[in-house]
Length: 178
Image (cartoon, rainbow, N blue to C red; front, side, top):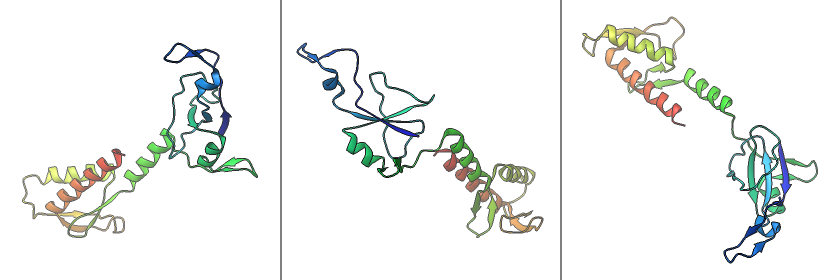
């Protein structure tokens, strides 16, 4: 929900650098405000230095030079009095999206084999590599690839599993660094 709240007068007087009192309208510099309980994508929030109304526990403030600029930036539709903006995801939505990306991650090695790269698969790779730690990189380890049916095993080398694990860790780091 977005509300346009217009120019907000302040109750306290301000003074310019010469000590002259400035009116509330001059102090506000005719900023036109919009408030939203969700962050609006593509707009920078402001931290007003005067009390502004809040209508949700997390109220986000946006300042514009005037009403026309606010309506244009917020894609205001005069007919149905709605705004056409994209909201930033909430923290919960962001975390869920990031987890879904990780749960569905797949990496492809130089040999073209596709490995699941979710957290459980990364753990299985470490277990397989630990079990084969004394073996050469050419040793064959049967593995169920991402693009194979469940239970279908493909011969992979220890080197391929090492590479897949490295790629999976890099992918997870990229997802988490967003």
